[in-house]
Amino acid sequence: MIIVPFVSFLILAILITNCFSIATNGETASAAVSGGNLQSYVDDYDNNNNTSNKTRRAVTSESNLQSNYSLTDKFGIKKMYPTKPGGMEWYIDMINPKSDGIFSITDNYNITKQMDGSWRIDAPLVRMNVITPPGAEPWKNIEITGYAKVISMSSPNITTALDWSARGGRQNAAIPCEGTALHGGLHVDGSVGWKKEIWQHGGYTDERAKAKVTDPILGRWIGWKVVMYNINNDTAVKMESYIDNKNTNYWVKVTDLVDEGGWFSNSPDNIFYSANCGKAKDYIIINGGPIATFRSDNLVWDFKKLSVREIIPEEKIYNQP
Image 1 (cartoon, rainbow, N blue to C red):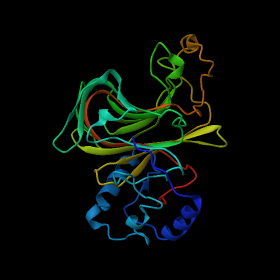
Image 2 (cartoon, rainbow, N blue to C red):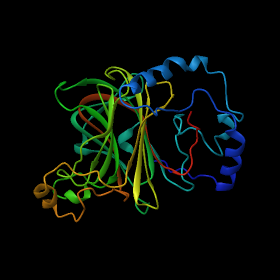
Image 3 (cartoon, rainbow, N blue to C red):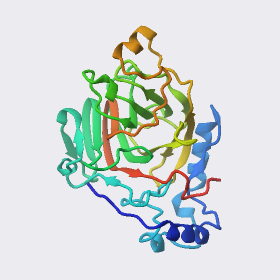
């Protein structure tokens, strides 16, 4: 577990003024495209922004900013939002993930190291959890990042997805009301979307911000990043997700969703209210939670470079085209 202190807002303001007057080709693209156009949008950016052709650079280099206002995380992965001053950052120990006291895998499934340094997990229901350290604020306004390569899936007719989630506690039917979460999902067929979980198991919503954004992800490395933060004086939640489609550290925004009410659980009333959680059926998850989770269902997959960071929601590191 790594906690990284951050710099003051004064340095932040100075560096932003100096660094971002020129747009950088090859940073994050915002896929403000709906429905069927989104996949071609992602593909076009991948084809037109190969890393070998990126010659334009920001006025101030990333190397000069590492000790001040870092554009990248510990693994060199581009950040969408800066880390909160004094905030918490967690990075997986790629040498021995299970040696980390705040990282755990539900049911303690085995993981095996691969020749490329990544780790493989093979289980029907994977829940890799990052727990808030004792005395720290729970995960709330955060950016969750990870790279994955799906090796195989149980069946094409069964739900198969990678899912980064947060804003809740233990996912256990014996304590259902702890099980709130916002789930940013990437399906094996290349589609994406968000679900809300108001309680476990009967509080799920239908998927929103659904889109087909890329080709099937089976057998290739992709980066998946989800961001969640409160807006409107903590009365609503903003959710975003980004994909690095070609494993080149080139990120495209593929979802942009706000929950300000009206996103209801799809359970019948008699089931939803049976948990006695005291939450409305369209409860907005503005609360934080002690656990952030890297999840999969019915997949065998390799993973690397997992991280969770507290962010400054009001700032963006890259200007979106």
